Amino acid sequence: MDVGLAVPQYGRFAALPSVLRVAREAESMGFAGLWAGDRLLTPLRPKDRYPGGDGRVPEAHRVFLDPFAVLSVAASVTSAVRLGTSALNACWYPPAVLARSLTTIDHLSGGRLDVGLGLGWSSDEYAAAGVPWRDRASRYDATIDALEAIWRDDPVSFEHELWTIVPSHIEPKPARRPPLYLGGFAEPALRRIGRRADGWLTASLPIPMLSAMWRTVRETAERAGRDPGALRMVLRTNPQITDRGEPPLSGTVTQICGYLATAAEAGVHSVIIDLQHTATSDEHLLELAAEFRAHLSAASAAS
Image (cartoon, rainbow, N blue to C red; front, side):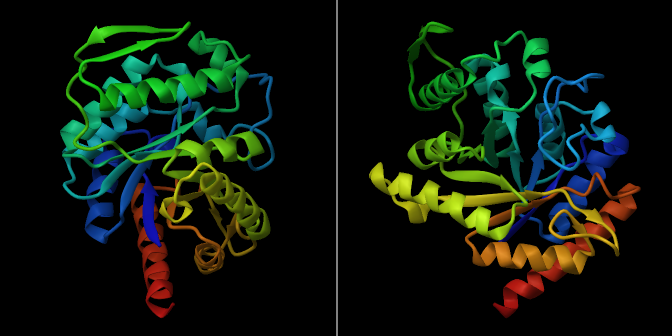
């Protein structure tokens, strides 16, 4: 199982020195990827429940750096580690603009980009982005269609009721088509992943639920004539490190790693460890990251 790390981006870690230090040291430690998320605002009276923890938006999310900028900074001080989005709210961006931002990261990093997209959960953020909440699923599919066309075709043209790309050169192209991971837990989202993605971005779910959802993805891929064995499951975990926790959401490093080892047996190929909710400083984050890396490497060697 590959082990990635969430790059400093929010709360007390939303600072250039944190991004630079953690990116450099994570690569030196042997982490496979650095990943950035996508938040736009923290409403005082949210219309929608946050899909994690106690349902409230984490206080740390009040300060949240732009994912494209953060990954570009990380690219500038690394040479081998993958750079991924987990996950961009795809519908907020016109596809041509989204393609340019993503391809720029890929181009500047020498082809190290992994693209993770999602629908998001906050209608307040959609309103701030000027994008209708209604019909977001069809907009999402059209955005993916346009991205694929821009990355593949030269010249490219794309006609849709929302956007028109007249026959044009849109360059540079990615070094290769970036792997495309999609998030989501509802059955339509899982079936979309099976039909058209390279993998599933998931979270720290109970193992039986994780396995059942992954089975839906794989069965859909097979029915679509795709090889389910080629798909990857990427799990993002945001644990609170404590001696009195309840894994997988909280617990000691050893306990969280025990859950992740079981998740690997259930089919998880890559894990993204986000320590920004629990670490108190850059030094603490890196100490925890090293501890996770050592535990998971030992478990992998023993399996």
